[in-house]
Amino acid sequence: MQPNRSPIGFDDVADDLSDFAPSSSPAPTTGKRPSPRITPEAKEIAQEAGFVDREPVQVRKRRQSFEGPQQPLSIRLEVREYNDFTELCDEQRWISYRQAVVELVKHYRRTKGK
Image (cartoon, rainbow, N blue to C red):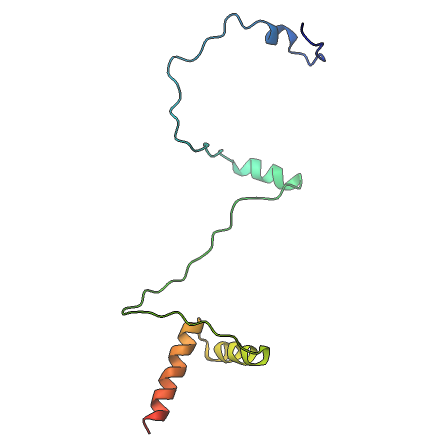
């Protein structure tokens, strides 16, 4: 017994599947969903309609490779000390905390050698 369906305008097509046949060659499966092609016009229309772009933001990686063995350093600072350290890094234009530590160690070695 068929349940009564609400008419949506496709009754004549949906009921007759006598000419349906699978395609001759199945589509290759890669396990990934194909990414949709989004045209600039589609993006513009979506933005005008209030849709938010959900494409992932590309994170720029600034990595340097260093020679020799390395050791991680993790320290806890009081907020005042942390603020002073980051202010020093900003003033000296040190782009990484690693660079700041290297410069501070160089300074220590220079003063120790005197």
